[in-house]
Image (cartoon, rainbow, N blue to C red; front, side, top):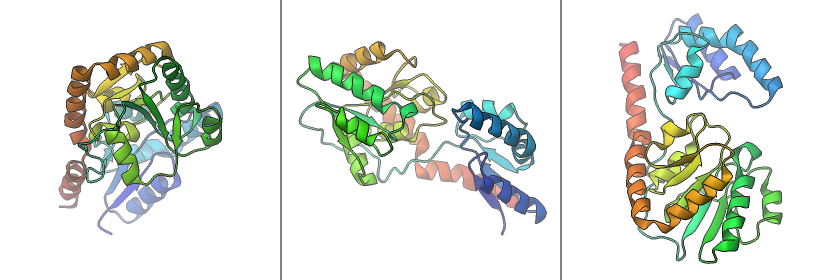
Length: 274
């Protein structure tokens, strides 16, 4: 091999790839996807890894690719490294703006159906709005262990699972707003995909979400669900503001296009291999 590129911080492939590269004296590159665990037990185990393995991988790699400044800041607590921010790539051949919209204004949740991602929060907000507004439609898109719970309590909200990537992109593009009440994101792929489709995002001011969203959406503090509900209603009724945020979303999400991301990585490869 001319180089080794490991992915994901705190898992065996990173340690294995780094060890192989050092043993064979070849450059090691590292995309961290750093995501601190939510449970205290996993966080304790991760802390052990951080100090026994992680810090050496960060300091010993030719280049480390955190997704954003938020991730770089967290990793820097464990070790200095040659940090080169490269965002998570989004396939712009699939996620792009479509001309058509749904017949009725539609508000959509997109994400894994896990509690910390907030689909149950989105559902409750959607149901509250649905009681007040009969002119709006609501979608929840994703897969995960909360599917049955969401379906049983969905009301007028449609729950769509096991869609193809192309189907997801089509639904996102045709939606008016995407809502992501997440508790934490190291990047937020679903958010970036929505923005690349030109759909404004309403999400939470946590983790790296502010960097991922930029001016392409609206953020509220985590737990401020009445504020999120108000922002949804205000934005869905303000076509001019929605159009402006949509334009900002497309512009900001251009940073995540495959070609732009891959060029950054490729140029770093060339620098160290040559």
